[in-house]
Amino acid sequence: MNEQTVKTQDVLAASSRKVMPAVVAMLFGAFLVIGVGFAHSDTIHNAAHDSRHSFAFPCH
Amino acid sequence: MFRRIFATALLAGFLGGLGISVVHEFTTTPIILHAEQFESKSSAPDQKQGSVQNPLLILAHGKAGKADKDGHEAWGPANGWERTLFTTLANIITGVGFALILVACFSLSGGAINGRTGVIWGMAGFGVMSLAPALGLPPEVPGAMTAELVPRQGWWFLCVAATAAGLWMLVFKKGVVWVVAGIALIAVPHIVGAPQPARIGGAVPPELAGHFAAASLVTAAIFWSLLGWFSGTFWRRFETRS
Image (cartoon, rainbow over all chains, first blue to last red; front, side, top):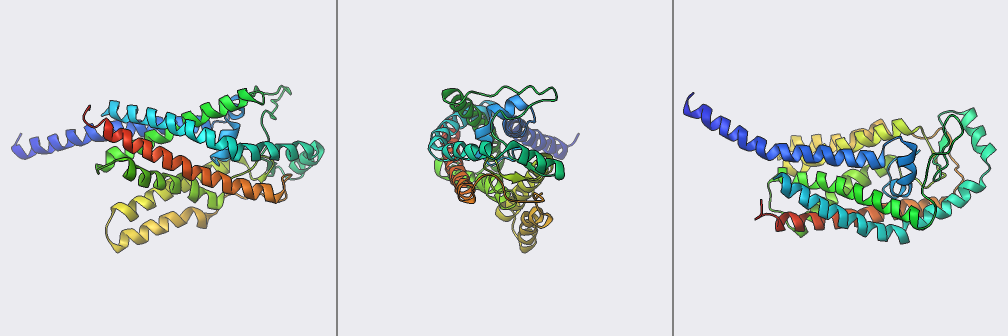
């Protein structure tokens, strides 16, 4: 393993340390927004009805 | 880094969601309640006739108006404080969800973030999530004529993804090619076109529907400004701790 390979691995590790938390946060954020604004469950729809209309999410 | 992103988004989302709930209470919610009076006044047979004649045509309905196959109505919060409570809760969860996406963008951008630059990021969120989709699918008041739900939701996601990618090219990439590609990408969903109802003329007066569309966009701008400012401020404050 030469010096260049080690450097590349370090850069990749640093980059994944930065990117991973952001990707997880984005996925979890999208999960929350889709759950409240887009889920087809009638109960969730009724509970979040006014919020869906106010945020202009497509609603029935 | 995980802790910094999640702590910032939880606080900013909670405060932004709570703040916009107060604004909604005096802006969009009264129009929704007013519109529901027209929606319930318009006779049910008329609506049913419409849906029988054209299955693609449905009305954006009011709260708790949906029955399952056996005719049971799904649970819905009672009008008054219960409805306000659930709307506030939904706004807070939506706020945390959008804040997580916004703060993840802060983290990936690597740029200096504070309350002021947070507001600029918030405006980008407003453009992507509210303004661009509103051109094809204007904010709907309950009782508005609409096309089928699933294609509209699909178009909404297409529009948000294309606008976000296009805006990223315009802001972070240099060169004429990127500018042209960015503008083209932002235009694509509108050239494709959002699903539209086959027939228009809903139960709610156009004056009310127009007022609602404006109120929804104005409150969305306030929401994204609040969310951006809180997110940027907390993101900076938690810098030394991570």
